[in-house]
Image (cartoon, rainbow, N blue to C red; front, side, top):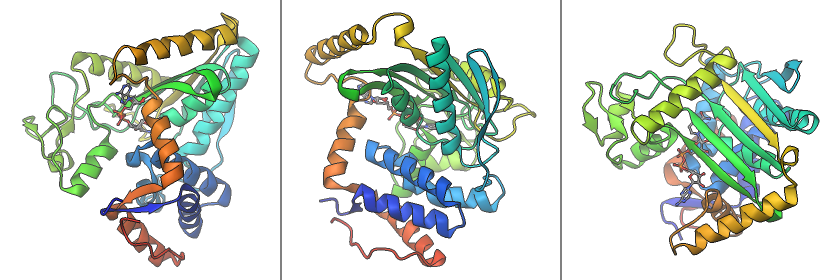
Length: 345
Ligand SMILES: NC(=O)c1ccc[n+]([C@@H]2O[C@H](COP(=O)([O-])OP(=O)(O)OC[C@H]3O[C@@H](n4cnc5c(N)ncnc54)[C@H](O)[C@@H]3O)[C@@H](O)[C@H]2O)c1
């Protein structure tokens, strides 16, 4: 029982999310993909990238940032590489197409590298990396984003939150999944803290004058996020700008050329180009078991999300009350029937 959240099944939430999007004139194919991705993020426990994104996405459609009818396509191929254009439509269909293209290239060449240009927000990178790992591939995805993060030692917004994901196949269709922002906190999570009136942990935000702060509002009034792990997270973020931002033509986040999109690069490696897949997966599994056996608090990256997903498929997804209220208001404006569901269900 969660008194401050509305608990709803994944299937119903997916249907409602799709209905909201289609009522806002998003074509049904894109609405289906976007709703599916958002609910997968909620199932994984990353509400920052879940259905709470619908309202800002619709705002981006109104502002001409997202072209809802645009269909992504492969615009060029050379050897084991390809370029996908998201055509400034929703990022999720573009990321799915790029992952499928990377898998096809890896099947042909042992490796596939796909740059996505004109790509809007793709949501949770881990979704696409995990899907590739389930096909027996090692996946890496990086993406730059609009400038919100200060470089290590500075306080001006120069870098995106610049997420990166890696995924590796495990036994039984599971995957080791490492997937996070190189900012100390993803902006969406800071937004959730602000909505809840909660402070941010130390080391996440500086105010507009560059002073350390625990007030999420300081970021929204012109401060900056910090990279995670001091110079190490900063260095990764720099590399993501230079790979994600520049190979896609998006530009680095702080440059005058930056086009406001999310320069995303997907790499897939066919394990069988190096070692037999069964041997590889068996060794991954015994390594994961050794890690878990090394201490009662030890889990393997990807396990927290898999555990939350299993639990939420059974018990339902808790949608925080402020997010529920926002979606209820949107449904009433768009004339979408919305369930009368009290919190704590
Ligand atoms: N599209 C974008 O522009 C964008 C930008 C930023 C973040 N994101 C997404 O936001 C999501 C959340 O990012 P985040 O920075 O909040 O992630 P996070 O800090 O919650 O880290 C999640 C990762 O850490 C692993 N993990 C968590 N606890 C662990 C433990 N105890 N032991 C081992 N591994 C553990 C998880 O399995 C997962 O791989 C990600 O899916 C990311 O792709 C997207």
